[in-house]
Length: 109
Image (cartoon, rainbow, N blue to C red; front, side):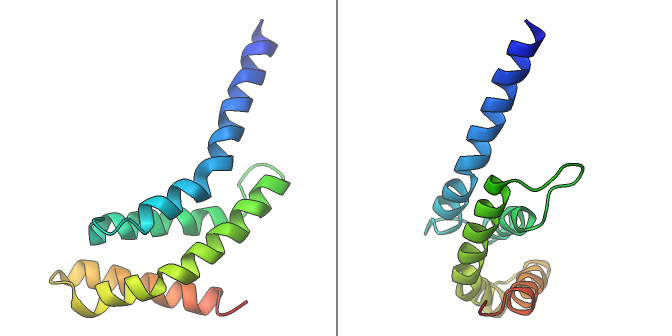
C-alpha cells in the first residue's frame, strides 16, 4: 500500500510539473494581472530554469527550463514597462532586477 501511495504522489507531482510552463504563460501574460503578480510569476519561471536541488535533472526539468526561458524572454518588455512607469519604487526596482537578470543570463540564446 505505501508503494502505491508513493507512486500516486509521484504521478501527481509529475503532472503538476508538466503543466507549470503552461500555467506560468497563461498567468504572466494575463492583461489584467497586477505588476506585483507578474513579478511573482516571473520569479517562479526563473526558479524553473535552474536545476533541481537534491536530485538529478530529468528530461521534464530540461523541457520546463527551455519553455520558461522562452517565456522569460517574452516577458521582458512587460517588465520594462513596470520598471519605467510603476508608481512604487520597490516594484520598479524588482522589475529592473528581473530585466537585468533575464537579459544578462539568457540574452538571445
